[in-house]
Length: 212
Length: 212
Image (cartoon, rainbow over all chains, first blue to last red):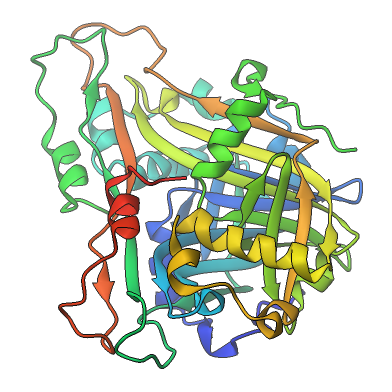
């Protein structure tokens, strides 16, 4: 198995599960890397986590899932949280949180299990959505491939906090410039009447109170 | 050479250079995937683009650059721009822009060329910063490794716009929820006097007028 311990700044690394879960669940996509004909490929894709498993999916027509089934892949989820401005160019840095892991990939084939994770995918991004639009049909489930990856060999790497080098009071401006992610104003589809009210579960997603 | 043509939704793919540059330059980090002992590894890292080259760097003490030098790697830069809410769970999607490419990795060893890209790294994230804090010292340049990747074998994949499936007026709320990135309020380092004014070039970065 590949080693997940950071070789540089080992103090920035952790395998604490709650820390991993938080970084992962805040991510909107992961990047999957795999080897094909000796070349490293990568694909960014949506995902959902349940316990120590990550689930990804793709159309059955797509080559992606077939390429990684029963293979060893790596995955990463990264948040760039801030630019860190130091008194010298050399000491500039980023605050970030990332999870990198390695996993064998298995396919979920049982239709009921597939349906369960289909619903989970949807509600993980927009909690309450399945109750509003209904579950996918058996046909829709059958033309979707779902794959499972394990978090058993994953670790987080984190830099937080201040500049961390000593400086004089007359140094250039130094400090942290946060990088923030938020949801913007929803835009209703042109096929719907403009006065159609935004459901409460979407309002809660936007204002952060309904975040998973 | 690996193929960068998307196998699904070929209409979403493009190799148009201006489109690639825009997606890349908006990125704050890229993900580099490489093969070590047959296993696909990946590392998120900061970068700068000049023309059709990407530059990444790391401490000379780090194993990262050594692992990828003279190897074939892939790189990706991804923006998740919106959640796309459709009338059925199945048709939900993301608006996104990503660039994925494959490249041989070469090291930059000439000290003057290294200094040039060191300055470029800094000013690409915070335009005007080098003029304020000065260039790195020859010693600092010497303990940093800089590697170059090419954009010659890269392609963008993009989904933009509306829901794209037909719906009735009485459908559930459907549309786009934008995902936005912005800089937050800068936090001055605790070692500096709190009244120290934020330089104009940082103000311009925050309000978007000084973005590269």
